[in-house]
Amino acid sequence: MTRETTLLLHNTATRQKEPFRPIDPDNVRMYVCGPTVYDRAHIGNARPLIVFDVLFRLLRHLYGAAHVTYVRNVTDVDDKINARAAERDISIRELTETTLADFREDVAALNCLPPTVEPRATEHIDDMTAMIEALVSSGNAYVAEGHVLFHVPSLAAYGKLSGRSMDEMRAGARVEVAPYKKDPADFVLWKPSAEGEPGWPSPCGLEGHGRPGWHIECSAMADRFLWRELNDRLSQEARARPHQFDIHGGGIDLVFPHHENEVAQSCACFHTDRMASVWMHNGFLQVEGEKMSKSLGNFITIRDLLSGEAFGGRSWPGAVLRLAMLGTDYRQPIDWTVRALQDAETTLRRWARRIGDVSPTGEPDAGVVQALADDLNTPRAIARLHEIAKAAGEDGRSDPDAAARLAASLALLGIDPHQAEARELVPPVPEAEIAEQIAARAAARAAKDFSEADRIRDSLADRGIVLKDGKDPETGKPTTTWEVAR
Image (cartoon, rainbow, N blue to C red; front, top):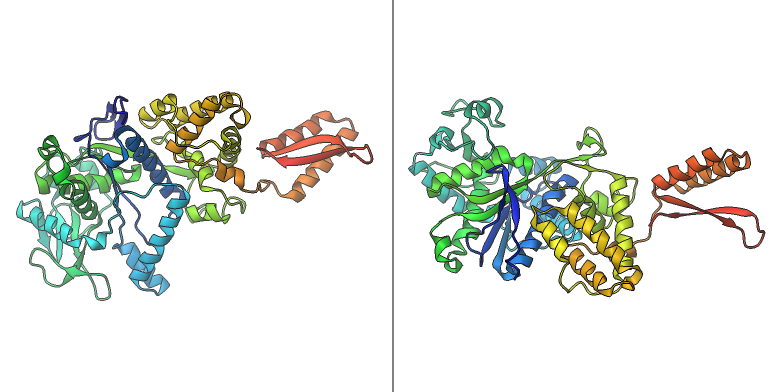
C-alpha cells in the first residue's frame, strides 16, 4: 500500500478540496449512482462511469485492492422502464435484462472495472420498506392517499448539500405537485402500482401493491452494502459512526433533488448528521458545442461510438473514448468533439509505439500518481504521460525504465494504448474529397499559387490527413500521397 500519498478530493458538501481521510483505512467505501435500465447509456452517462472508475483504481492503488468496496446500483424499477416496455410491447423483465446486458458490454468496452457490488433495486425492496416504516415512525414521513412521502420541513438540514433555500426548492424543485402533500417539496418514498405495473406488498399498513420512489433505492442499497454487510469487518472507530461511508459520487445533475433526498432519508432514518463524508460530482457533457438531445440529432450512445453509428460512421476503441474523456478535468463541462477523439487516437498510437511489448505490471510514475491524488487531475496526469513517452523514445529504446513507467501509469488510468494501434485507421475525410483536394492543390501549384496550395495542405492536416509529396519511381513525375495522421 502507498497510504503516505495525500489524496485531495473536492467535496460538494463543503465546496472545497480537502484531504481524504477514510473512516476506516482498511475498508474504504464508495457508492456511485448507476444506470436506470430502460435504454442504452449515452456518452454523457459514460463520464461518471470513467471518472469514478479512475478513482476506484486510484483508491485500490493507495489502500490495496482488498481494502476498497465500490457499490454501483442498478435501477430496474422506474416509471421510465414501465413506459418503454409498454412502448416496445415487451415485458419489463425482458427490457431490463436486455438493457443491463448492453450496459455491461459497453462499460467493459470502456475498460471500467466491475464494481465490488452491483445491486439491483428489485432485489432489495425489503430494505427500502424497512427504511420507509422507520421514517414514518420517527415522524419524518407520512401516509397520504396510498403514498408514503418524506416531509421535507421535518429535517432542518435539508438543502445543505445543494446549497438551496427552502423557498428556492419549493419554487423550482422537480417534484410532482399533488394535493395530498403537506408541503410542495415533500417527495415520494412509496407509490401505489396500477394493474400490470411492478408491485410489492405496501408498507405502513397500506393495502395493495406498490413500488418504491427512486431516491429511497440508493439510500437502502448504500446502507446495506457499505454498512450492514461490512459491519463485522469495520474498525471500532467506523462502528462508532454507524450508517456512514466515505465517498458518494455521481453527475452534477444528481445533486438536487436525488442526492439531497438521499441525505435526508438516510440521516433521518439512522439519526446521523451525514450519509457520506465526501460528495463528488462530475460536470456536464455537450456535443460539438451544443447540449446533447434527440431533437438536435446529436444524441449519441456509447454503443454508437463503439460500433461506428455516430461521428461520421467511424468506430472508436474504448481506449480512445476513455482518453478523450479524461482530457478535461472531471468537475468542468466537457465538449465532446470528433477532433478530441482524433487527437486521443493519435496520442494512443504514439504511446503504444513507445511502450512496445513492455508489461504494464510495474509501478506507475510518481508524478502521474501525484496528479491523480490532486482531486483526479487527469489533464496534469496526461501532460506527465507525454513527458514520459518522450523520454522513452521509439519502442522504449531511449529509456526502458520510462517505457515501463508509461505502461504502468496508463494501466492505472485504465487505458490500453494498443487498442488504438491494432485498429485499422479509417480516414476522417472521405477519400473522394481527399482526391479532389489533392487535385486542387496540384492545380494551385502549377499556377504558382503557393499560398492556396499551402492552405489546402494545412486544411487537410487540421482534419487528420497528412499529404506527402514525392516522385513516381517509374516516371519520375511529382506525385502526392496521403495518410491518416498518427
